[in-house]
Length: 630
Ligand code: WTA
Image (cartoon, rainbow, N blue to C red; front, side, top):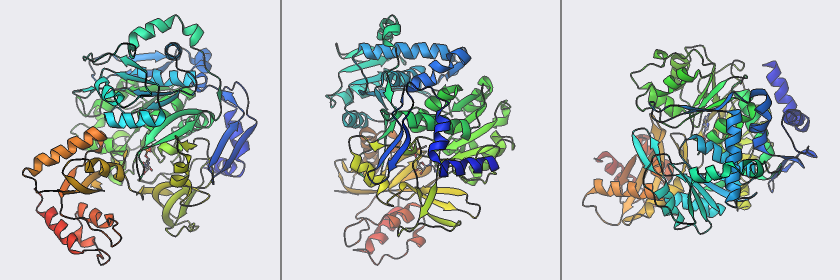
């Protein structure tokens, strides 16, 4: 703990000295002139200015002499009867070089944007790294998003090329991918090439001169590997990727991460938050379509020389033993999952200890607050009561882990993310914008100073970045999260304070979801709130006004769900829909979500004062409707 405190103080007092010592461990084509330059007003954040590098050389090339034959990626397929695959660092390096040559043969160059819409197969990792190799900016879109969502993301970033598969396997289901991309591409004039990987062997349409089979193009690229597989020279602040995430207003925004700072942060946080040791197998159960997969399946573990395990399937199929079987089969040391997965497995008849979990050394949690019951189950049932749990708080925007216990070092408290990593200076503010200096306080969580992995902008709209993150508490980065700090200085993140829901660890903006529901023909208006859900953490409750009394309300609900699936994706489907006559509004026309939340939570007695409402009787009517709900 003393060493941690010393490091934390050093990073705070002398950030340039601290981070230049850490960055010295990487492979640079040219060293930096200045470690850090910043202001949070514009905002302008520049780390390692003047340095040149390629992140894939740091993830692949530099490991070849020392651990070239060690597995870099182990891939466990959806169906356990299909054989797993293992790619050594040498093999992965070759594949990435070949894929980079393939992209260059299709005209992709530094700065171009490439959209990747793939299931969790090794080619997803290869495609992402190949983009980074040629300096193209990757925008990975999670496989659960709809054609409309893909189109919005492609158009916002003006992508030239899309990489997708024919279909995907998820549990017992086969999901179409190419046909979804085809629907998106009707609206995406910037895209002129599509590379299609065969996974599910489903029939797909292929358009001459636009669509190409990955397998054939990859074969052709093999002989160009030496010539066209080279690592592009990147400036420290060149964008590495865009990842879209939901906010409280409008369409999802493209969070932009740049090369050097993100690399240093992903690596530093991986090594420290998991206490990585050479030879460790790291199993992160997230999808590469989210930031957790970017940082802790790909860039963090690979830059550290770990063996990263990638799993195509779901925890519950063929049955709820799958995670534990994988841990046993591949002798996993570091296991990183989400509270929602833990809660869903808690209810299963299988006990994790029926499998041999003796290889495990560290357990991690991410994505949402972990309730104490789930934390304790994880500790006892998966960790045998002896393994440390690192509850890691962070965001798409932060690039890597920010607040977490250092496993085996920081004394744990169930449900608390505990203390900030070196480099992170959390501060709390009250609603009035005053900083809360007392140790024991609760307020809105901000970060006072820059860290290498923070977002630099939102793609195509720097004003939006400034307004969303740097305006609420001037001089600070605002996280959007509420937080409690206890007498020991430990942080407990309590959830979003803005209109963003966190459903099964997925971020969904209420405004975005309401827009989708309102597109349904018969909907006049809607309001969406979150409520506590035993497994998902938060469930989605939609209050909907229709323009007529439905003949078959159940069918209309299904229609609304289908509309949401089509416009955003199945992950955004409400759990509950209640048809109402009116919504509770203030005289100025603002929906009082606080009231709707209490109704959704089943706590009408806690609704409180309704006198500021335009029409207080509305609440009575909604309550009646909710009690008579079929
Ligand atoms: C929430 C995921 C409590 C938080 C890496 C944050 C958490 C949002 C935790 C970011 C945690 C993430 N405890 N809440 N350990 N980790 N969150 O961008 O509300 O998908 O703002 O990044 O998830 O979600 P995102």
